[in-house]
Length: 284
Image (cartoon, rainbow, N blue to C red; front, side, top):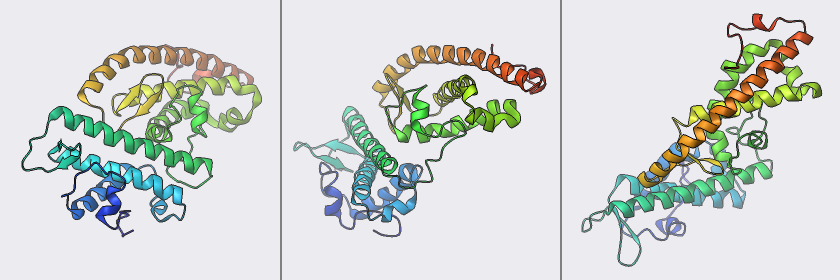
């Protein structure tokens, strides 16, 4: 491994993980796109120290993810087409890229890379291996907590992508309202209903906010995709309209429940609810 965290010393090593790429691609180009893959996709969700791990499973997942993100980057920025032998030719001077084929290649590489990155993150979690990028939020200490409200198909990668939106909802809309009651809410068995209302509100609000910024797919589960083809985008857009209505309804339901639970809490603590915030409540 070199200083740029490229996991392949020779071009033959790279072709073990994406064998369908036709030879003729210069190794320098592969190395450059591996670095791009690290910066754009891998280092956003894992610590750089993992590239020098002695855990063979970690390195194997990383190699699959890096190679496929690299192939995705090369395919995205260059002429790419299928040869008669079924291989993929990059920067072919004799062939014009077919749009449909190129979209299929982008879907294949991105989905393969995404799946291996999820396998890596699951491996880290299952084996209690530190990864600072997967820190908990105030009200969600794990992906399991979040999936009680929005199913992510156990995609740690999706959870990490959603966390800025989760953090924003907690910081702007919840913490100012609860004041010094945070520890009480997190630990008291008598406030489980309030914690449930907070989590439901935050989870749904975070997903609704992320829809406009992330490449989200939403069928039975919510997942973040590196690439969505135009055809997938059209289907996903129609699907999202219905899902957004359901999310908005959930937000309203949890908002009203949150109002009632906060009023009950502050009544017990003898704190007027309306004095806790300029906003007189969540329910709308």
